[in-house]
Amino acid sequence: MDWFIAIGVMCVVFAGAKAFCDVRGHRHREFVFKLLASLCFLCCGVIAILLNPENLEYGIFILCALIFGAIGDIMLCMDAFFPKGSYDEGFFGVVGTANFFVGHVIYLILLYYYAPISQTPHLLIALPVLPLIMLAVILSGKITLSKTKSFLMIFYFLVLGGTIIGGASFFLGNQSDAGIIVLVATVLFTFSDILLGLKTYCPAAKIPPKVAPFFVMISYCSAQVLYGLSVFFL
Image 1: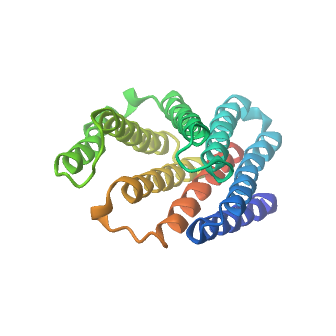
Image 2 (image 1 turned 90 degrees about the vertical axis):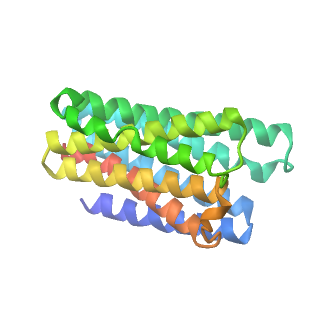
Image 3 (image 1 turned 30 degrees about the horizontal axis):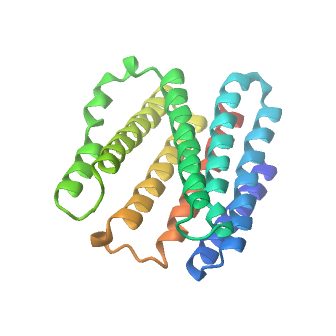
């Protein structure tokens, strides 16, 4: 357990350092700290699998999601190496977002595979909540997006809502340390994404630009560490 605590602390420290560099505009340093934070939560997943090989299948699911998340993180920070608005910057942005989204989908599949929604069908009532909120915000004019991006944002929030439901279903089906860890990780992950979306696309929300990066990164990296840790406790 000491290993996980040490890795978790380092991951959060690197996440905070990444956010600090983001606020200060130190893009190359931001890339380095984001890489280190990603390596930390990957290590957490690998060590958890090695210490609990009985849950190898679940561990592989988690590790795949962590890998895609790490790749997405790194690519989204590649803008430090290319001119603003260049083709290369746009390319890495799109590929990074796609990898990050794949990580989300893997978590979604994982949660519903290990806690079938047929056991908790009443939770599906909450599925439309997040996408409807996003739709209302878009229609209010507080977010200026193209029709394609508006559709993608609504779909993305549908996935986030499905992830929250999956986390709750997993907890109800595994009322143990692993269930609690996964639920907390899912809430933190979703909080990070929503805050990032509001900061990026919704100026009317008035999210403090010098504060938001810390909440986004620390909650996101904490979630990834907890997902890795859940392999050990399942």
